[in-house]
Amino acid sequence: DLAPRLPQERSSCSLSATSCSSANMAAISMSGLSASALSARANMGKVSSLSGPSPKAIAARTPVHCMAAAQIAVKTSDGGDKGSASLDLKEAGKNSAGIVHKAVVTMQQNARRGTASTLTRSEVRGGGRKPMKQKGTGNARLGTRSTPLKPGGGVVFGPKPKDWTISMNKKERRLAMGCALQSAASSMVVVEDSVSDKFSEPKTKAMCSVLGGLGVEAGVENAVMLVTEVTKNMQLAGRNVPGLKVCTLPNLTIYDVLRADKLVVSESALANLNTVYGA
Image (cartoon, rainbow, N blue to C red; front, side, top):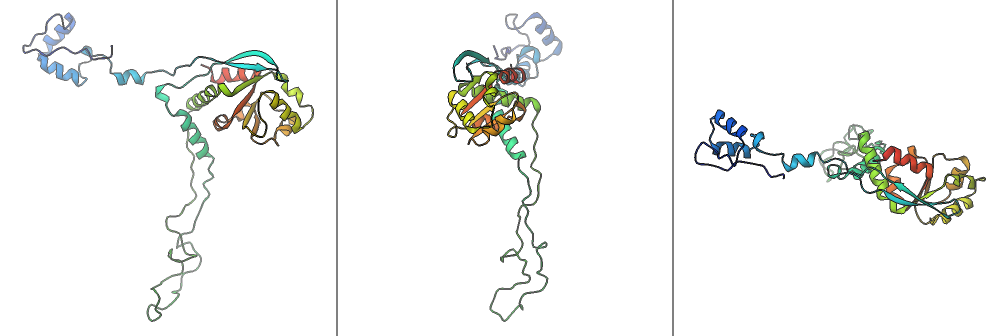
């Protein structure tokens, strides 16, 4: 029960035994305060012994919860059924609402170079001589050619080089990635580790054949192939497939997960996901 356990107001200085324990009765008698004064202080959160924790305090201690583990189909390198595997990653609770959005904003903002720069009127070359006399020409008064009112002049409040870097805690980054991967479990397929043997030659046709057997439309859907080791032939075979990224876990970004229509994960890479981002 989260409702504050407060004594009812009484007109006299004593409280009945049914509303307070003997310990509280002793504290009240020693304090010399009236019941109404104690009630007012309890409403202000001053009498901690007579009131329970507030709902806000309870919510602040709500831990990160875990959703039920997702069962993902495991296929052979030829596309045959092999069984199923479990993906059980840590999910964000009420305290961490918006953690995935924060991670995406952090990644995109840190990718900004911040090199945009313009010249103010004091930095524009020239402009020292008055271009025309003050009166008699019929034109507006003009004291310099570097004025922001003329083409080729300075820029008012234009951009200057700036460091856009923002930071995010390591636990927050891992929690955001875990949430994104767990939510993408429905579009994930696990393939056996021997899939790398399919790329004996660096052929794009071999990559498209493997993806097609796993239910991925190569060149149409955005896909991520997550493996523990990217061989040279695998890299060359996948670089010409539009929308495909072949990478290992350290090179996987949260934007890749959110952008992908399908995620192809090797068995060993799935084990690494459960180890790093597991509940």
